[in-house]
Image 1 (cartoon, rainbow, N blue to C red):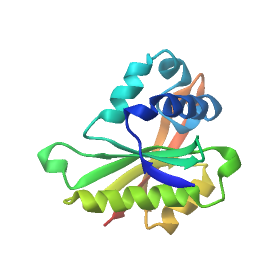
Image 2: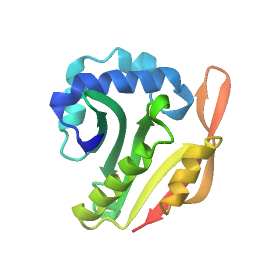
Image 3: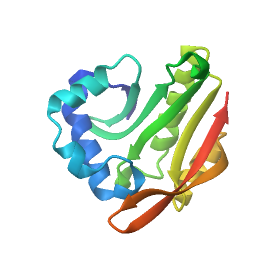
Length: 165
């Protein structure tokens, strides 16, 4: 298994994994399967070639099995911050340390970029395994976003977390 930055050449594999995540775990992402499955592949090419977003991918041979995206803030008053989004590891590979390695590399990348002092993320309030992983890496909760997502008639709360570098 290896982890590296994804670029536009990985768009097909990324799209496949992203749509799997959105379809299987709709409450874990602000985007929906219905929205992103309608996007042309070019939109995924652009996402992975953007200079202000960094998506790391975990590969097992030729199969993309996990991703995480680091997005540094661009506004001058927020440049000391970055956000982690779109964290996903295929269910059959969870508990093997892949999620931890993806996050560690994203955190290392934030440090390498320079100027980033804190990293934010949100996690579904009921996702205890993910929250344990984030806390083990140094994230701490600072609040809840009640009813953050609404899917059909069901609301889902998010826990807000931050790590100070």
